[in-house]
Amino acid sequence: MNIEQLALTVISLLISVIGYFIKQLFEKIQKHDTMINEHTTSIKVIETEHNTLNNRIDDLFTAIKELSQEIKQLSKELSKKKDL
Image 1: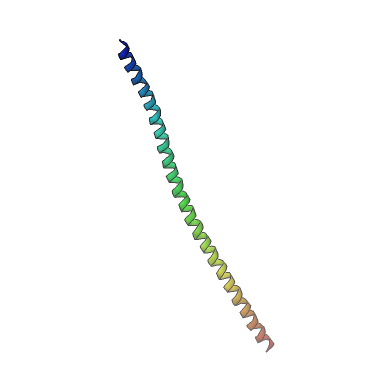
Image 2: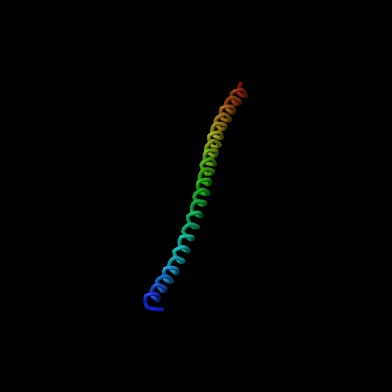
């Protein structure tokens, strides 16, 4: 083996090692991207459920307020009928 062949062999070996590590790096990046997409989807679902729950709670409080007002009004009417 002459020096040129040895240099070419060493350079090829270095390129192979660098390529291996770059491949591993890109596989990890792809795995993280997949996980990020999954988590983003999960977060969006949770946000939607949270908003829906908040809307339902708001509707419930509104209904309770209306019911309380109706009870007060019925109570007043009942008091008036007792006075008669």
